[in-house]
Length: 477
Ligand code: CS2
Image (cartoon, rainbow, N blue to C red):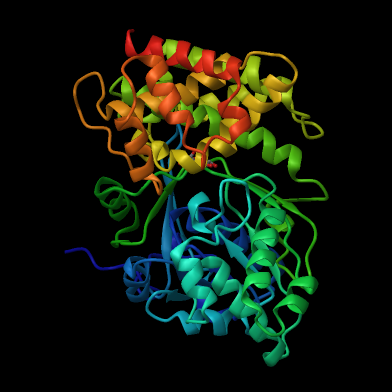
């Protein structure tokens, strides 16, 4: 059997640019999934290399299972990124993860690390649903885990962890903290600040309000396609590395990070690793969410229904590629103010080209997950903006309709199951199950889910008619 990757046995040509043992922990990262390891951890390693500043080792926190810790611990925290583009794949080990914690096993260690005076930045990739936000944008105070954290137990939610860690910083004498949200949400920094303020108001934790006042919550836009790693990827990586990497991540060559330059204290020189530090992230973030993520979701639902396993297969279907293109050109672009220097037409073309990367095997089922929290961010903003100017967002409505049909039928054209993996699965299933027959019946039942569609949108006649058209077209192709 091939040996397991670690510091001692990695062939020189694949050695990480940084030895994690030389780093001290300056960053806590909540949500140690594949995305973080292929994105922020890579930028951070490069920033350390560029500057020689060894303060920025990462303490990665898994929010649910011990799987990542069990993968990384025997590997001295090392893992590799297998980059797959149109040319032959390349592989590189990354050395920026200094420590791994599993939150459910040791919640107090997470709080202690956030309160560590040497920690200046907390970054987060906990997915859209990880924030436990209510439909209107505020904190969901009815969430049982939030309620349990509010009783003062060792915190299990992200908001609870941050609150306890921040409050403890007064005792440890740590300086003000920067909390850098890296999830695909609108104005993610201000959104997280609002959740924290609402939590603080409900919790009355001594010192928290002052720490929150001093903390900064810059917004950021992250971009890199990182499909779930498969056994075949691990085999391929072992062939390239000569050792086995259980913590491998796979990614496309493209990588981008745009960060609002608003920090409370020191930070890694991420700009020296290619990140863009700017005063206004919103135009980048809107373009990315409304163009890339929206067409991704559209292709996942339409492609899944057509029996395509991967996004690359879906976008090779000319009709689907045409619909994705039209969604961007007709519905989305008119709602955007492009960031300086970004040509939206070229951006749209580059997005579809990235999706077509045949080596990535990004599954439609993976992108289709969590629709109830992704649709509002990716598609409903576009729908609202177009309706507000009297335009008909036909393609954005078709994408929302495709989600409705996907979750209601649960089968593709070949009769294969399309699993519903969603934090609101029971509500979504109940709505679909209670629908009257026909397209209008399904649309009305799904529009009644008020945690996805607010009252105004649900009552909009134009939107409803567009949805009924789209759903009918999918139900009777
Ligand atoms: C995808 C994103 O899974 C999904 O919903 O749309 O993860 C997408 O791959 C990234 O945002 C790309 O940066």
